[in-house]
Image 1: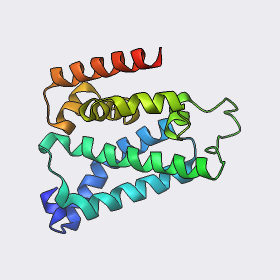
Image 2 (image 1 turned 180 degrees about the horizontal axis):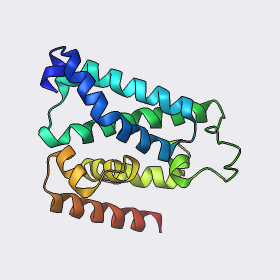
Image 3 (image 1 turned 90 degrees about the vertical axis):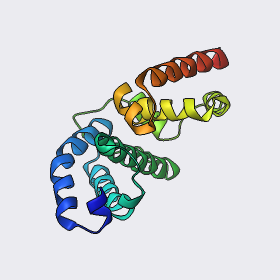
Image 4 (image 1 turned 180 degrees about the vertical axis):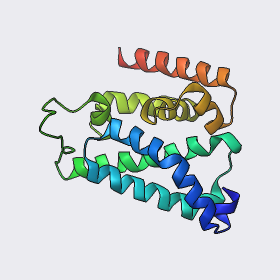
Length: 168
């Protein structure tokens, strides 16, 4: 990332070569519209090129940082579509209702859940965002947030309990 931040095009190309197949697969699991996925891929790598200097993680967390950027870009794309009263295009073979995750990402979360999330401490919201919306593992979340894995587990458990209580 330091080399990319310094404008090293070869380092960027290597990052893209190593991570783009993985990122593309993850995005396709969350969105059936190839145009949206292509736009998110482009926006993600453009953001990485521009913001590589702000990357503050350890060696193993570059992938977590990349996924966080991509997940936020996907959320933005779903929100734009929701504002325009469009659902993500679904291939004809898939005539099922949008996945619950897509509905959440599209901003169709109920008022009660939104309020419950706002009551959570910021560190609990960070853990939920990383694990639920971004789909990161406990280990990836730990690296991304710079806290021990057991801390991630504890925060996730407390957040779930607090949400359950707030919504009951």
